Length: 209
Image (cartoon, rainbow, N blue to C red; front, side, top):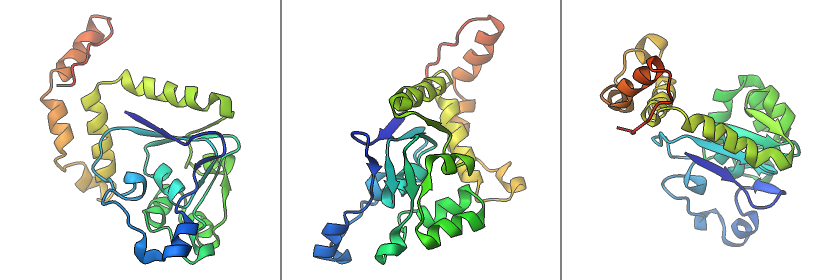
């Protein structure tokens, strides 16, 4: 379980350092194999990650948030992919993730204009799970995290893997794929503990194995 946020109350992440790019050129910009912020190209991370967006999440910053599983945004947050306005494109996954997460035409409208969306607009389009006052941002993210932590850890990993890997297939194919985390879950002691705890009317004692 991880919670990703920015320092202070101004920005979650404003993305690429354009001043550095202007001085050194795109050829000097190196991205880790795992993508912008070490996150945007990590497509096999089955640990849940929550983005607590505390201000501007633009360009690579928004791409990092989109790579998370849940987004909680402060009321004043603004999100967007303004790269075309500076001669670039959202190449760290933004152009692929956003159209998969909201209506295609709406996503294209935001991407082709570089327009920002408010936290409230992002919530309305299903990009953000919850919008809260800044003072409640981290407590809200922690509340979501604690609710996830109440669940069996292997079940959470299996759920995330199957949901994300199955997206690229027709339903009838996705239903019958073999998912490694699902196999681990089915062979675990927690699949015995969960129903037993329910039957005995007590909290489960997860072992993660």
